[in-house]
Length: 209
Image (cartoon, rainbow, N blue to C red; front, side, top):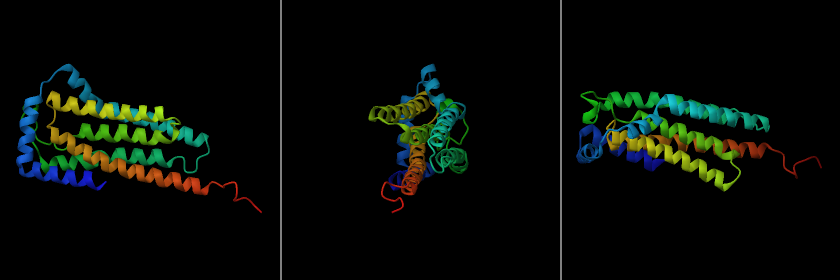
């Protein structure tokens, strides 16, 4: 959790003072931006209207499976994931207003492009979906498949945002860092919940003598 947080602080400092890293970022962003329908469509995968419903379906399925199997506190993982998803705008919006970074040329004279809200939404939504599904994926192939889909969706959103000129590359990278911190917290909580549930399940040697 510490490396992504430290990297986010470094990027934020450079963007805030328009340091060498931010200047290089803008040169790269201008060089690679080329708006087209494909990049615009990929960027839309980070919309709240797309990513959050996907997460909601996964959380509903995980809650149903856990309740059906009699899992103790079956509601805790989906509720926690949903709460973290809801907290993303509360984290991103103040940072946008505080940093007030101008966007790429295609976006006009406005500010508030750092960090990327679409990237953060995609990272937390698709990442949390994979984490909540993880205990119910019984084979290595299924787990690798879900992980690959989550990574592919996030890479697609990042490519679309930068290629279409919606965001500078560092806007995206910073939101990945924030997403990594949020998902690390969720993973830690889910791990503790799983261990607690296992310890409360009577084993073969814990019955009456």
